[in-house]
Length: 293
Image (cartoon, rainbow, N blue to C red):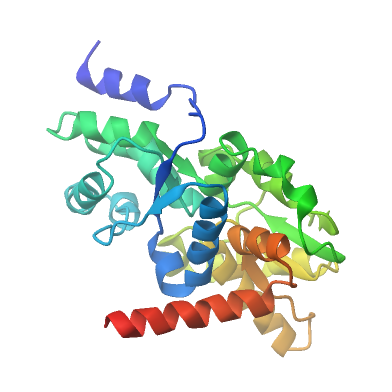
C-alpha cells in the first residue's frame, strides 16, 4: 500500500469515541473568536460543568481551510503546522464548527501526506471532534437535559451546516441536543438539508449566487414561525442571520435572532431565554480581552 493510500485509509477509519476525559483542548475557530465569542465561553462552561478541564492554547490559529479550499496547499500547511504544535498533547480536541472539524479530521491527513508531520496530522485528526459530536457521543449530554433550569416554551429552527451534515455526519447529534431540551420545539424548514450559500470563500467568489441561496434559506426559516435560529456553524449564522435581518428591515419577515448551539444549551441549562446571559458573557469576554491588551 502506498503512502497516499495509507493516509486515505487512515482518514476513513470509523470514529472511535473515548471515555469521558479529564481534559480537552478547545479549538475556538476564527469565526467564534471574532464574531461569536460567547459561544466559545458557553462551550467552555458546559465542558467545565461536566468536570472536564478545558485547555485553550493561545497560539492556536486558523485551521487553514480557506487556503486549502482555494488550492494553496503549501500556505494551508504553514497554517496547519501551528495547529499541530498547539494541540500536541494526546487529549481530545473539541472543535466549535463543523467546517473546521471537517478540515482537521478529514483533510489534515491528506494535506500532510508524505510530509514529515504526516503521523502527527493523522493522530490529531483521530482525536478531533465537532462540538455536538463530543457532547453526545462522549458526554451523553442529551440524556442530562431534562434537568434544564429554563423549560419555558421556545420554538427553534435548527440549521445543520453542509460540513456538519455531510462532511462530519453529525446532523443527528445536533438534533438530539436541541430536541431533548425541555420546552423547546424544533420546527423543520422546507429543504432543510440545502446549503445556506455561505461555503467559506464561496460567499465572496460567488456573491450573487450565495445571496440568492441565503434568501431562499431565510425565507424557508421565516415561514416556520420559529422564535430563534440555531446552528453549530457561525458562517451559516452570519449568512442566514444577515439575510433574516434584511428581510425584517424590508418588512418581508419577522425579527428572528440567531444563536450558536453551545449558547442555546448553556443558557437553557442555566436559566434565561438566552439573550441576556449571552450578552452578559460577551461583555465579560470583551472586558477580559481589553484587560489583556
